[in-house]
Image 1: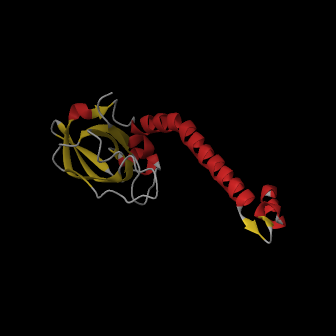
Image 2: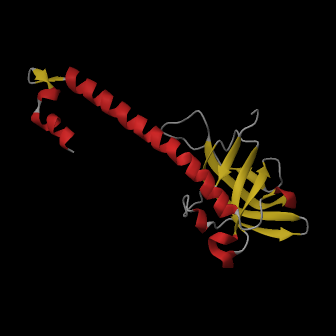
Image 3: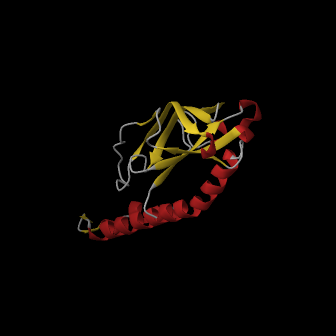
Length: 171
């Protein structure tokens, strides 16, 4: 593809609990009006559009959450500051802010109330990749630690020969 999007699920105080969306959308004439904030959104500043999850019927709990396509040029949509992250700096991370953000009714994805299901399907598809990334980071950390322990000298020998370092494998 030629365009980048982002996934607006996480919220301040709710994290990525898709069933606890405090961002809400109200149907007004032939539009949906969204209010709320999404936090820690990857690709926020690079994205042309966002898939945003908002409560449309609070009484239905997670079955009252809907998904919307929100373009960055829509009035009432803004971005927070870029987060200064420790790593993974190739993409931005920021808040998506909705202040009476009006979007066309056809930007509802699926039917009203399908947002939770859409979010879960998307998250499920990404979990194997996240697990693989975590495993790769853990392996790289272990490799660096082992190399350091074999090269770092203390008391005339590599620290890998010290009992306390050798016990790490027991954990």
